[in-house]
Each structure stands twice: as structure tokens, then as C-alpha cells.
Figure 1 (tube, protein in one colour):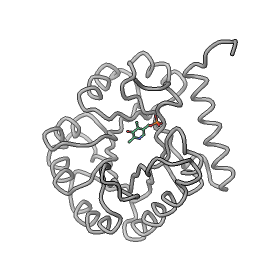
Figure 2 (cartoon, protein in one colour; figure 1 turned 90 degrees about the vertical axis):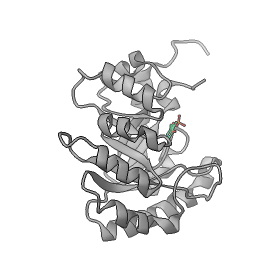
Figure 3 (tube, protein in one colour; figure 1 turned 45 degrees about the vertical axis):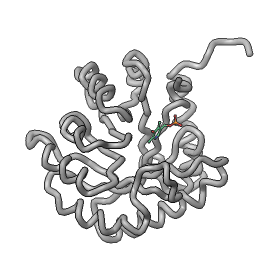
Amino acid sequence: MAGQPLTIADNIARIRQQLQQAASDAQRDPANITLVAVSKTKPVAMIKQAIACGQLDFGENYVQEGIEKVQQLSTEDNLCWHFIGPIQSNKTKDIAQHFQWVHSIDRFKIARRLSEQRPATLPPLQVLIQVNIDDETSKAGVNPDQVIALAAQITALPQINLRGLMAIPAAKDAGDVAPSFERMHGLFLQLQAQYKEVDTLSMGMSNDLSEAIAAGATMIRVGSAIFGARD
Ligand SMILES: *Cc1c(COP(=O)(O)O)cnc(C)c1O
């Protein structure tokens, strides 16, 4: 096809429009849905283009890469960094020092270390429990029936705030992920009934963000639809 390739600004505008449309279809306020731009493997120059469009929330999967970007962009105002990848316990200190949010808590030991290692000079770390909603052996996350028990342990920790749940449903055609998103929403409501500060349901990526919003997502994590395919 002729014409200029799509820019990051074009992509962000399109995703915002898609977010607005999905919110409107679901009779939800789009202001209650945060777009996290997943910049893993992508260079700082691309992140700067997104910042120029007013994008403030960014997601990273790899600790070392993420910290380098946080540091290189430390003069930018109001950025919010989300750690969304698997967490090894020897990396918790780096995460606790450099990120504002962690979406991928899947065991108490990790939560306890993050709380202990969160610098007292910073606000508490905002965290989500990752749920293995389709019971995949290949995927991180707790089983749905373990969420409430883990939440009880996490909410007792001083330096982290439990804000909700995150999931990555099994890869399927977009329509088929709806039941997984609906089950996540059910778990989220159950958790929210117990803990007033729970307000975040992180689900939906480039290919299924509209379905996630229809099911109640309050945070979507979009990578390739903004920054292009990854190698
Ligand atoms: C890579 C990644 C994303 C973004 O995926 P896209 O399909 O590129 O939008 C979202 N969430 C997590 C946890 C990821 O690892």
C-alpha cells in the first residue's frame, strides 16, 4: 500500500479511539481505563515519541532493560513505570527501587521482598496479583482459587498496596477470550468487596483490548499495536 508508514503518534491515536469506542459500547467512562504502553525491546527514542503524545504509563518485562530506560528518562515529568514480566527473587530489589507498579505478583515471597526492599523515601509500591486464568502450565500466575488467600497475606505488608488483578488469557481468537475476561472480572469483584483500595483490573493487549474493556478492564497493556512488532 502506498503512503507513509504509520507513526507511533498515529498508533496511539488509534488505540485511544479504540479504547473510547469500547468504553462507550460498554457504557463505561473511558477516564477509568488506563492505557499502559508496553515498550519492552523498544528503544528510548520510541518511548519519547509516545511521551510527546501525552502517554505517561509504560510497561517493561525485563528488569535490567527497564531500569536503563527509567534512568534515561528520569528527567521526564510524571512518568509511571509498570513492571509486567516474570519476577525472580534476586531481582526484587531493583524492581522495588525503580518501578511504581508491579503487575506480576504470583507468590507471597516476592511480595514480601518487594515490601521489605521498597525504599522508605518512596510511596508504597502498587501491586497486582497475576492470575493464571486459563490454567496453563506454561504461564505464571496463581490459580483463581488462591487469589483470596494471597491477597490476605499481601494486604498485611507495609510498603506495598494491593490494587487488584492482572491476567494474560490463553492465546485464542479474540472472541474466545471473553469468557476468561469475564471470570477475571468476577474474581476482581470478589476481591473488591473485601478490600476498598482494590480498583484495578489489568487485562487486554493489542489484539483483545476491546473485549477486555467490555468485561471490565481498568488497565490495558498494549505493545505491538503502538510500537510495532517485536523481533
Ligand atoms: C508483551 C506484553 C504485553 C503487550 O503485548 P502486545 O500483544 O504486544 O500488545 C502485555 N502484557 C504483558 C504481560 C506482556 O508481556
